[in-house]
Image 1 (cartoon, one colour):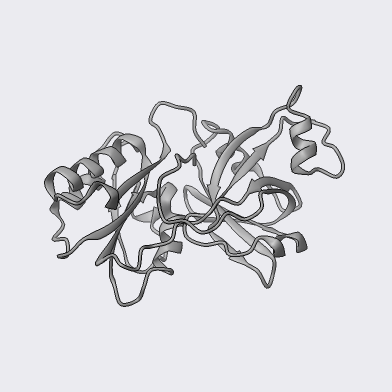
Image 2 (image 1 turned 135 degrees about the horizontal axis):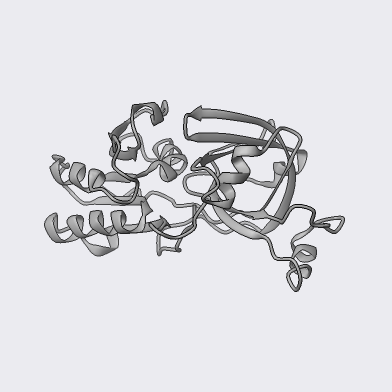
Length: 260
């Protein structure tokens, strides 16, 4: 997924660094979602991973000779003649005891470089990434929370659901291809495209339009395809009358552009 920065409440930025770590597991969690697990003692310094915190995946052309050690500085030194493709991915799970990190990849063939990489990666291969970003922090003063997105937002929404205050109501809507793409995430209303193309339907905005939303002012976190996010935002601002600063969509991908 790719992201656009938004003016949200965010955790303090950690030191940006490069990790070059081995893949230890690859699991197909749904027919079109692969979970790639990396583990290494260096990941102990990746502290505080939560909500929508992400890293930048570096994808080098096959056969590229990388410097040893590969650091952020030495990687940048290669840019004059070898620049990696980069894609941004949310941390799905971080286990600071086992020094493991999970990343979930939506698989759509070789249409995107990260999807192609995730389709063929095997345990023992390397994963190189840079980060992490600051993480979104839910505003404890909000009366309730609305989370919305497509399958690219599942890792972030799952993490946010575990973070919001337990005494506040949370509504979460996630659009996926069909029932087979649902994941065991409590508190989610799953919406099915059922054959409608991703990024070319109104499944998400239609569900939110039809919803009986709670009273009070929410904080809205949503991410996915750009036009879908703008449609939901327009409904919440124009039809529901929520303040602009409470509704801040994030573009993870755009229809028609080479993405993940």
